[in-house]
Amino acid sequence: MQRTVLCQKDELLLGDKKVYQVSRLSILLVRKEDENFCAVRNACPHQGAELGKGVLRGGANSKAVKEVCYEKPGGFIYCPWHHWSFDVETGCSMHDPENTKIRTYEVKVEGNEVVIYS
Image (cartoon, rainbow, N blue to C red; front, side, top):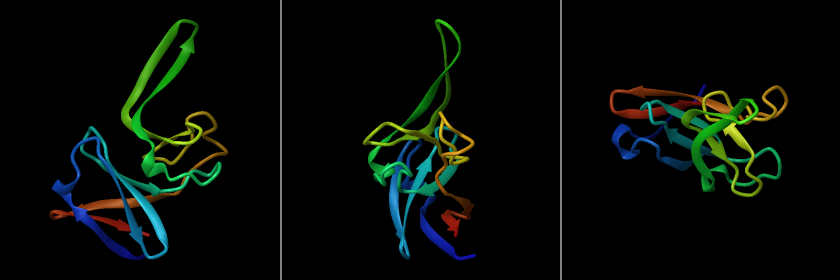
C-alpha cells in the first residue's frame, strides 16, 4: 500500500472538503462534523462528475409517511450534476447501497498529518 500525506490536520475545518491529486487518482478528502476524516474517489459512478464540486451534508430518510429523519450530518457527498448521494464513510449510495458505490480510502491521522493508504 502506498502512504500519501494529504495535508496537516488543521488545514481542513469541520465540514470542509478538498480534492487532492495522488498519482493518477483524484481523491476527495472530507473532514466530517465529528472531526473524523474520510477519503473517496472524486468521481460519480453515474457520469463521472467531480464529487468535490458537490455539496456535503446529511441525508434525509423516511421510514413512514409524513416522517423525515435527518441522519449523518455532513456524512454524504452529493453529485453536482444529478444529486446522487454517497456516504463518505462507506462509499455506498444512499438510494442503492448494494449496487452503487464509490471507492473509499483508508485515512489516518499520524501526529499532525492526514495520511491515506491506497
